[in-house]
Length: 419
Image (cartoon, rainbow, N blue to C red; front, top):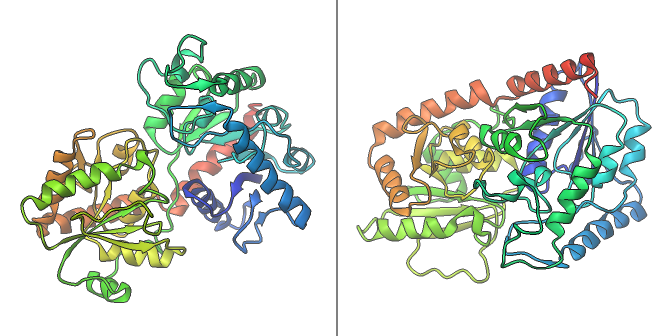
């Protein structure tokens, strides 16, 4: 069985990291013939194939840039990332002229493949969703309310009154309706995203399978908290909570404002031994300290350092408003670090309430603060949760477990010729 994975990148962003981890999981079994096509290659993995010439690299950069410039024709009140995927690429011919048995599309935005080109792939397609773009218009993240446009269709009458200029969301959604006539198999890492896909007007009658993102549990594993803190030069005498996200301090969806509100409540009770370690980005230029005890670690580029950081922390906080299956949470849990977040979207797939962490009432900063304080004040409970977290990660997200689920899905689609 020859499998082709397609992604915009092999390392830039959470979706790219999740996709690369799937590649790693599949290639652990030498019976698998797996390659990965990308527009932006940053690793040295021989299984990853990216643009070779400087001209092709330049074209990829220009195409992505033009795509983002086109988005500016719409003024949207939704501040999440938007993508059109309308520009032709060289990727389609490479796919169709190859001898792969099945194609697994992942995060293919940045004009990696156009909507029309996806419909012309002449092989069975599995599309793994890392956000909501596939069944929305051009938006990557939206609320899943009953009147969400992805559930009832992008009509001229149901656009937000705050949005201005051309309705690119509607145009893009109609393009998907036009070209994606022949269903392909959808994979989502969380049950929440699967439910959204099944409730969408576009994918309502399509096959959807839930398969989580893989974690290398041999790398993401617990080590001594004291040793980890000494390696990273973190305080030994404080309770440390972590907040990790690429650009998380500047993206509303990641909920750092909710975390700040929670810390304000905690510090009313003089939690002077508490500090929050922020990783995944440098200190934002517009960030004001006030009285928040933040330590900025910057971007951590290797998994070993990340694993050490998780082991150094007492808790990880994931205060996001919308999440699929957050890798910050699954990585932390694999290292035995309990997670506190809101009981929303894909978080329940990651965190078992009062077993591996705490799920607060949706967007209630006071309950988030309560959960943080509850866990930090009970060392015995933290230790039980730490052990439960590690067990959960090994049983559900380890590479061999996830690879087997994908292999079974690929094989069933190829054998049943579902395309």
